[in-house]
Image (cartoon, rainbow, N blue to C red; front, side, top):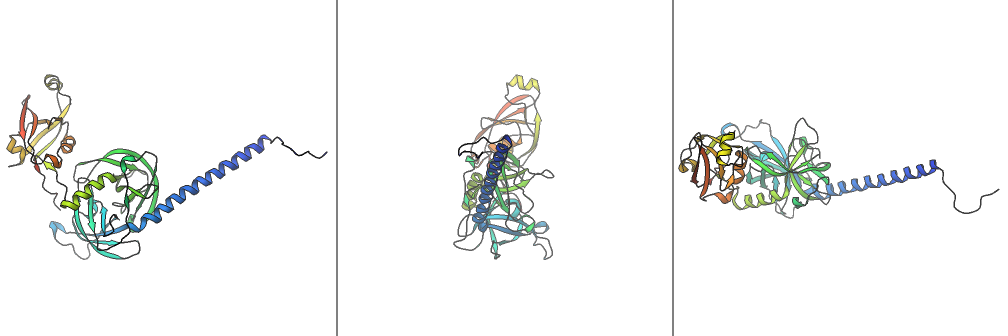
Length: 346
């Protein structure tokens, strides 16, 4: 007997097949959307990503020989007239910089300024109407969002890798020894040569400058936040350097005894033991001595070297501050005037 037109029940096997087909179609659509996002970003940003070949200076600042190996890194053009953001460690102590763009053209570059403490630098090439990247707002990032890295690992120009923002607000020690705050962690694959290249979001906006990987770990990479890069680039363009203050001591972190903490009602359990004081430095002028333990500066507790560095900003240059030390178990309040820190030697 023929079936009448109407609705018929679908077997459980059929329902499962329909659901599986729908899931597969949804997954394929998501993968296609992901692929389109990465492809569109690569097409938009790659023309502004450059390869930087670096010929270093020889020992003692002498010009390197013609057979000395060159280093390399990446950079991002951020103004139409050829200003490029990159890492300080890429261009530091360089004798000659050569920039190659996506179309294969090469030109000499000049160093505008660098800041080893944030591992950022600005270099320039001659040009006009050059393709540029757009600096995004790294304060609006969320963990888990798409992150795309473009650079030149091992000299392979404009290599694109993708991952996610793994964590925000990390701290990373720069090659100058200072702590860089507000660093972005990503699992986008980075390799030597990616340094200085942009980390971008799904709209192609730069959210960071790739700077470091943790070896031999996989998927743990770091980028200097774009908001940090924007501020530092402005200072480098204005002065060619970033001014920071210093007080002129050598020291190391030491724990404080429980009796001292209780007696002086300290809110910290460590300080900086001064090992040496530079002659004619702010510390020498303030009367600091080897053996003193710094516990506060400018009304802020100092539990170690990193806290001291965070306090010694440009605004503290030439400003009279109170510094608190422990001397022979007694608490001493002294006045100190930090000076501008000398530039890191090439």
